[in-house]
Length: 449
Ligand SMILES: [Mg+2]
Image (tube, rainbow, N blue to C red; front, side):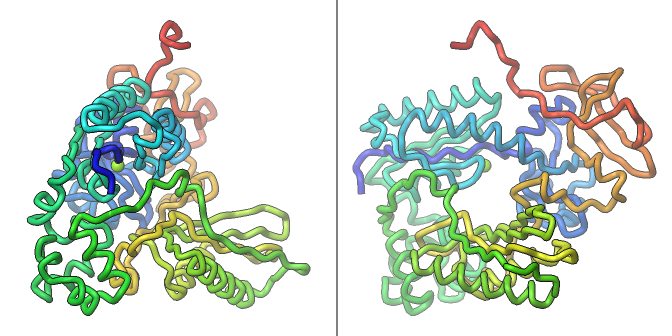
């Protein structure tokens, strides 16, 4: 392990919700919940104001509505989040060739590889400047953790939240980790946590005291071995560039379109098994299961589902692929099918026991254009999902606050305006049309170049 805290972990603060608050002045300081708004939806992100009510990500939306009935509920604007994510990742790539994104708003950076930092002081300065740059470019806050390993850097950024920086001095890791709950370690989810608690192990220090043999006996060889090493703060995992963009996938094109729904289902199961064999062959596991369907008319759909943790279990991948297939109309015939796994990880699985029990985060499609968030409203109202950008010929830019009963309510405001006023229109009002999001930080030409 390196001796300087030159691995940086960046985690944007309540990313989706913060983007919404920055876009929509009337929501600043308010409880904002972003996610699937349909009956099976889950919370993707919520603002810190919503967390006060006990709402957290991956919670079923119905439960969130009971806890925080007066919060603003918005559909995710993934395209816009991706644009901002690219700005942030661009700042990280300027620091080092080794940037490993974990999601749109989270990444590891190896500062030593880029020559950006070599010791404690240089690393801290990079972290401070990065946070300032992120704020200047995006208007948002991110928290930074610095440590000598990925595991500790991630723990540090968690401690830094929100809007902070924490540096863990090399040599202090074990003392720091010791009293922390076992759930602090990567690979320990709720089910593994319960399993350890039943064996009398609740803190990281107790994992270390239990010894490697006992851990292996409790959790199996791979998981037990990895967890014991992490409890001793041993983590040599390198920062791997561009991991997130990689996936393992297989697909088949059919000479004759498949019409039989049963046959389509069987093909998907077969592809899922093949995909898992390839995944295991590469020693990987992954969090996001992707189904690809090309229909008779060459229209191609992708559907994805993100699990709570990485898996390489064929039953889990098969089940997820089958669920995804349920949402695809294949009546006209299918000419290509594919199954893929992305969000790859090469270390211990998030929570093997929870995964087997079928826990999952559902309904967060990668591509909203392809996968409209399921709405309770009818098709005409779906166009006006809560949170999307609109433009009115007379009143200008705004966002949909709600719709129903043939009406749509729009709040007219922009990122740099005062909180705006609300007006209600008929859903078929010809003066109202969907619009692109406005940049969060106004471009100031004199600062460019
Ligand atoms: Mg985050």
